[in-house]
Length: 412
Image (tube, helix red, strand yellow):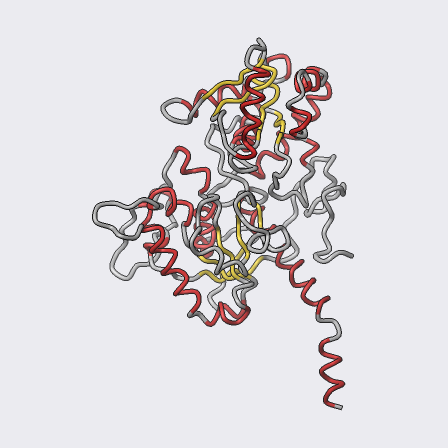
């Protein structure tokens, strides 16, 4: 058995014991992930949302939806993972059936959670304002480092049992090197050296989609999707994203292809969602980083994703076979004249429908909710952390198989 004892990405059995080709109810994990959460001061989390609690109040009241500070909309929302995980832990006093439970004693915890809204800190506070000499974002990272380095919980294992969410690729830029022993929750590894972030210790979490979720019963079938393939967004990108420009010139004049510039400003989000819901395939092309929110917008729109990003890492791929609901195309093939058109036009109605039906089945796994529900994105992230924690512990035990015996031998 491999460390973690889990089915691999090519297995037909997922983490719940369900055969992927079947539709079946998810079982709860064998045990819950026990999480200790630091009571960091509000400036690290909900005060970044404008929340002002009472004197000495660390957390907002989450018993009522109306009292929960809302997360900013638009593109801010796509990196809001830390917000949803924190809310889920704060709701530990509410009966729930999720994968994680908050504990008050760190010695009883599997994971120590750091509730710093790092993506929001970057998005809102990474520029100097007024007479500031240091940005709020940099200041918070510095203070976080001081806090963690002084904690007995960090010293105990050198931070290896800590969980830090840095979903925006530019978040935690100043602190990430010193925190590299911790488990990160990331969007991808595009801007991380392998010694700081890698699949051996870290978690890839889905973006929060920004388009409207299409209910399964409203999802248009093959014959009611007039657009063959859809892409709307920034076309001129640097590094690996240069392929967008090449594809734009190859596809822009095709009558059944929507490949245009676009932004999420104004009614851009609404138009993007409508376009995806009217398309058979949605292109997810590498940009400045290997991943983007577009994949998860496509899933919410139930438009079959076409992934053109050779270095992409995908959430929950140890339990989800993406080839069952996505089409993968190597970048070197995609830029060949006529290749994409030949491939996608060659996918017949019955083949597309199989992908689409599976896409509808897995779509709930990418929905962030409060309160969290079994099998939603929050639940899936916690389960991924539990699997990763188990795998890391297994590797640690294997590495030290003979250490205790050798120590005993020295005492003889």
